[in-house]
Picture 1 (tube, helix red, strand yellow):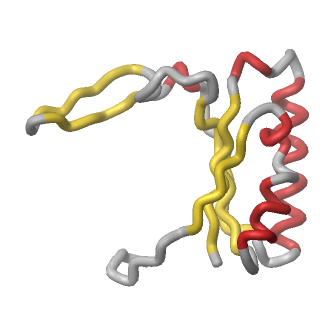
Picture 2 (tube, rainbow, N blue to C red):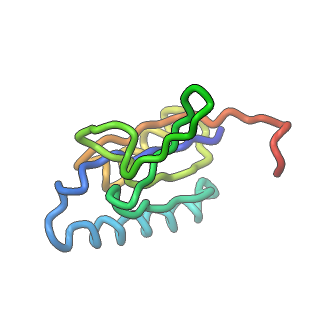
Length: 117
């Protein structure tokens, strides 16, 4: 089953150099997952200060700088994995460095056969 692992952290919680070490550890995890046939995709996101949010209300498009909601943690990146079951996805999520500072949300991917491949 495919799972999206969404990594939420507070950007300001990282000391100088700590983010780079986190990236190195995440890349190593990606290579490990690839070797096991579980890696599908992963990527960090650029700073939340570069985010743009789009909403449509009453037929009008509203564009604002930054994330939609003011929260303590922001979406910082993701892993897309193929795991045998939720327990396996939980084990992998626990190995993501961002889980030590923030939260990793695990969401099963819903397969829509009507989407282009």
